Image 1: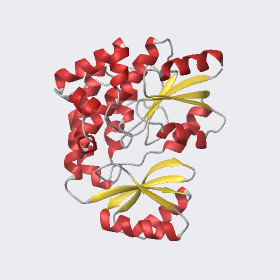
Image 2: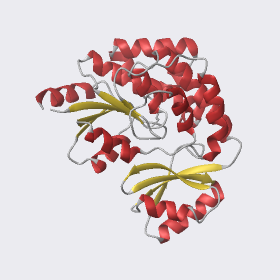
Image 3: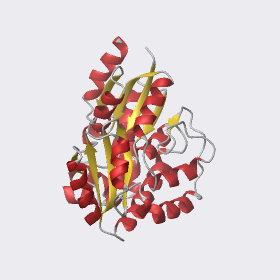
Image 4: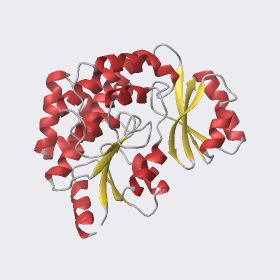
Length: 305
């Protein structure tokens, strides 16, 4: 058996009840959520029983997803399953770095709360949206984006799925052009044009905020979004830059496979990353842990491999 990688999902996977079974059954996950409650009173209530509208607000989404993501990873550790390396998609990178020991779980929560606030503020400055384009190559999607003002390819999810972000009217026109080219578009459950120039202000504020934290070299390789390689050196700058730059997920997974990873475990909410990885690296074993009950299945599969 090769290496095991944990992958931490980002926005779009949120739903009421996320992390609840982990909180109820894992002492490590419970300690994580309880610690967060002291910093952001009510966060557990939002994660476990908040409305779809509450969870759609970036300032709420990011803290809740961070807890669900990291809580699942800590619960896996309790069960004796550890990652040799990790990666996070967008905000999932904050959880991945906490898991890798770049900073404490508590500092990671403080960081993700501010990240969410800055991005929420940036999202309110323009009417923007994001849409996933299927059935077209990344090159073709980029080519169509270039025909429109303020529309950008921002998430390179797989060989035939690219997410686009931009000003709403222009993005709607882009969708028509993409459909004419044979593509299929699905709008994302997010409230802004993340990973695009619309987030430049948020990235700048976030970078300044990170100056108040100590960020160390991770104890295991954490593959970053913008370069698709392990983060090292000036990690704070990479964390800030990521907000306003594309997520190179396809390259990230391929580079992880090349480094020896043959087993991926998605930790947290949903199975979006699992689906993408199965398309990017069809020979890899892929599992997801959203509920506490999922851990038993993963444990049996991993230890029998």
